[in-house]
Image 1: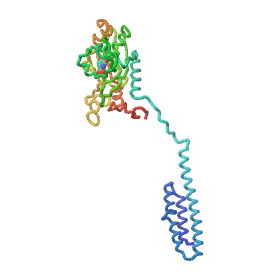
Image 2: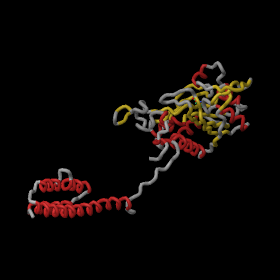
Image 3: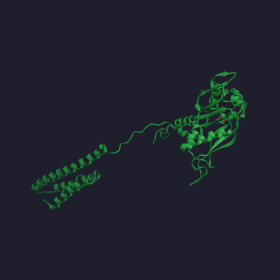
Image 4: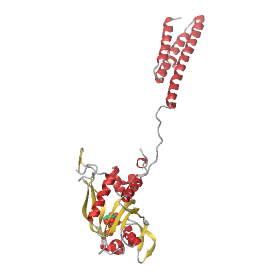
Length: 347
Ligand code: DAH
């Protein structure tokens, strides 16, 4: 037998035996058995052989050699496939945990806010989402023709119209709970936190038609701005982190006098207004606005049957989506209601 052929076949046995990966093995297989492979070449030359005797022995030899190599190949192939299976079935390989569901960011913010206020003696109380105009506006010192009512664009509900309470609305803010709570309790002290859905016909980066607010109301003897400021600082530190500063900025609301916007020092640039990249993208000025607050207007106390010469109080109303967006760095409120799993599932 041609020693050249024999040494080439031996070489192939060694290559198959030494193949380091399945891919490698398959490449060698093509070299040996492929259409343009070595055996194709051998059988082609055999076809040209005129000596029939020689042709027969050579043909038999090629076939046995071919079978031998096939055998080596399939043995090695089995080895590689077996190793792959072993990896999958290896009990020591760390498992892949199933994805767990978790609370939506808004729900977990609600829970956190509830806990923070309950630690300082506030209880949660909820009121209907379909509400009389009276509790949403008139009782809050905003009569029907008051221009400030334009800021609270409102969904009106087809239904009964009351002589005393007007039309029905979807609560545009949680402030409706203020007078309702005064009337419910009959007299101070009041330390209420009202967390509810609110509705306004807006849809953009910072507004959705259904959002949540939390409203705080504290009424007692001797309540002053100091208590408001202290409570706002307490909330901000508990919710956003202990180094957060709070400020009250003069503003105007009909239901409080004086009124303030509550700001916190920006948690992204530490209140400096500057980050490594330049001007802070989030706050621009070092401060972020949380929402409105103030000392409860005497007319509101009166609507709630409370004597403003004996009692005073403070109130605030913040958006839950807003505080959650600040805390979790979400730039578009609509993402919270987009069904995106990033906001629903733990990563
Ligand atoms: N209700 C106001 C709003 O939705 C927020 C607000 C401002 C609530 C001042 C208050 C307050 O209790 O005192 O924009």
